[in-house]
Image (cartoon, rainbow, N blue to C red; front, side, top):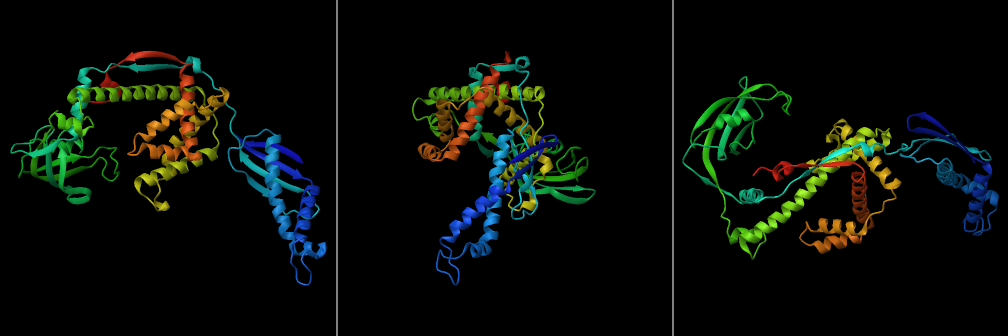
Length: 431
């Protein structure tokens, strides 16, 4: 077998393969002999037809099968011989192969780039640190109370944090526009649910009152046809409601799974959860800093096929989230190109760390990750069983763990400095 490889552009390779005719003809003859033993042809007893007749009847089909299989086999052999790592399926170019002639074909494909991780020792990351204090726990409890708050009508003008139920109608140059009207729409004053001018127009409104006010749409507004324009809104208020928070009593504690120990026990569990979330947030911050700098210090050429594949995956995921089934309505691929390039680049860099450091998924960490996943379901044991009995699902979990091990190893090579902050600063949580 003769093999030659040419670099056409970037990571694309053009590999020419020539397979001796003897290999093709030998395999065709062997198969035809096997066929002859059981072939049923008119005028001949089973297995007694002459080879000439067998070749006439089955030769074309057998040859096509042999050529296809030999092409697959020799492609794999040639890849191994030339020590290539294809990143995409090959495009095969071949001419019709006459009987007794060598099989010649050309495979065009992209290869993975050669990667050497550089610059780790020069990377600096800041590790946010914080202590959870009583005020932080108070803020979290308040947040939990808000989740179970009720709204109660009041006979006064609306203030910050109040909810108003309104009907509204907006017009631009006297014409209505899509999304510019609504009935019985709840708006919490000061929450940023609506545009600033709209919320400003509702300040101090009372039940039964109506107002007309202008609203300027920002230049970067999502709906391009409204960006930068001014609309005139007429709004009428049906009711004003204030938020009533539940008491911090045993009933409230029980609602969050604390049957005994009351408020003290609830605070303890809340603090434990906050500590877990804080540690996760800190690790996420370190990971983001590391990966951003790793990309800057290790620019790599990326196979276009891998980017296209990632874009397709992201489009599919977006369609599922948005409930879109018609592929003609899929978000444009350009919207995912930059993020797809980043994901593929990071994947290649992380895989190089895993390979160069001979990392293997830690069984204890895999078990811990499985328990974390299962804990989010009503029947954790059922979820654990589903994962452990499915090699594909287990492989995904092991890969997640392995990627984190690679990140942890890399973080051990960079310079870390503590950056004291408050809990709310790290979590972007406002009490």
